[in-house]
Image (tube, rainbow, N blue to C red; front, side):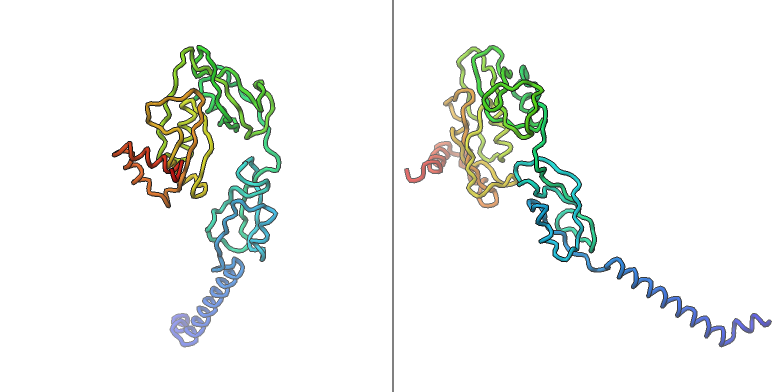
Length: 283
């Protein structure tokens, strides 16, 4: 009876209320302490660091909000040495103070690789092997030889380069291929509307060379597309093996390629006139 009487007394409920209040207060203090410790609600956007030299990132982080960690270096001739090319988390992501930002930078020295053996490979196989090895195609040269489209010689800076020779990654290689024993000529592929990458691949696979590239709206691999070419494609006239194809490119953000393609599809004469106006304005 004594316990039951105590549990129903005012004193018991008073102490119970005090205990609950203390527990709630302790819980609130704990949550606030965790918020302060983890900087709750203070996350900010991570800046885009692409192209920024690692030595300059402190200027974008004056309060030491983030901690930048270099995890790798790669060779990339599109950026200066020491420039950031990859970052994690991505630009625009939210992060709290002290968050580590992992970056990959351009190596100060290009990577050295071994020259592959391209002799006797087909044109397509040789180009694929070059790209896989981190090398670039400079030009295609053709000579009379029964081994049509087969690589006869591989050259670097004008001289034959032996397979296994150490060479800088990203170097340009010239390929000499056979063109058969006949004096046939090639048609030029129609490239209007193609992206820069698509046009280059088509030109190379057609046994032709890439000439100069004119970017009217600045270079943007995502949006730059061919709006004029010389020689023009889809014509009866033919060119020699290894002939050069020049390209004019514009951004599909500013240029109406749908209208241009309709001109080509509906009126070949109108298309030829348009190309002539582009290449030789005022005539």
